[in-house]
Image (cartoon, rainbow, N blue to C red):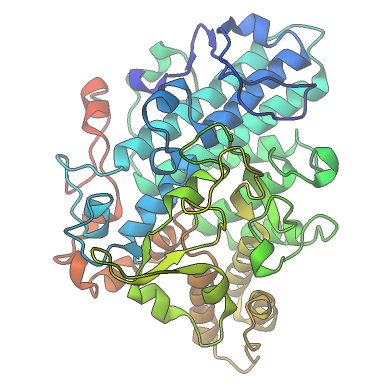
Length: 485
């Protein structure tokens, strides 16, 4: 596991060039500064806030190593768009009509991932573990600090946000790879020979981290709630709702989703064209991208990387007639000499075609939003008992109303309601954070769906998990490879 540690080492925290004016505002990256020791970082609130800002900056912008080599974190960072792109191609959301003419994500699209052709799986693994290592460094730094100038309130904040970031990384790793080492330290002696942990153990750690973080974090956002670029209690509760849904604790999934939805003073469903704006009240948590790249300009990494990516016929045909999401959240790809016509995701309006270097960032990268909570509450409520069916339909209709669709009637059968939940999740959350890929796997519908898609044949169920990077197994002989690779 020694490849985990890149921009934060056991000796101290490497600051990614973040400057702050006070403790609570994340600013753009300036010139890099030198590394400082853990004792120095956690001497005061101001110093600790720089390290905390670095934790967020890595998630959306990458570290010094990535910035010097890629310039497009949307393809390379799990937390900046790479999950959407890789899992979207692995599922039935994104593809290229020519297939053979599309090198990027070909092995994911055609279900041809091998140990010789790993696709983007290694980048997902490494960037997620870097984010986890950064979080571990902050967690250990807070707990080791004895400085009286590092206040109790800010200690809780740093600890809570770092625990939530760690939980976020492990949630995606366990779902994409399943057999993963559970690294909870920055000590090389503790992490170099970790075995593969069972998914149950990983999920329990995720839930433990989130439950602990919930006790430390505020219910409000900084800056009068205008920018939701820091984790607070409601993102943690949203992640708990999602984690309990995935682990089939439907009572708690319903409870936590309901807790978030009930915060009507903070959250509301927005109009379709405002959902992904930086001022959206639907947003629970978003990441603020830098604007110093002439390549990306003011676009989010994912908005930039999704430009020109084709949506599959399967997804396009799944939209009901009159669904305004198809109009508002997709864009026409005009046909050309070498490119066929089609449709691309367009939830983010600033993209590679209209980005402006130095321009206003009217959109940030949305990590979680309220619509997902409605869908979690609906699904969990239905699985709690069919007697809740009318309330479930009410939640689905809240999403459908925003899309311009007619209400579903209360006369639907239980199976029809269950099918409607899956359909609304597919349409509402398309091309976002791999939701479709994860949903098909957790509901055991993936093989039936993918076996019907010609370009994925011959389909093999082992493709539902990405391979553990071979370099990691060579470095840690306690890790085991996923079956089929």
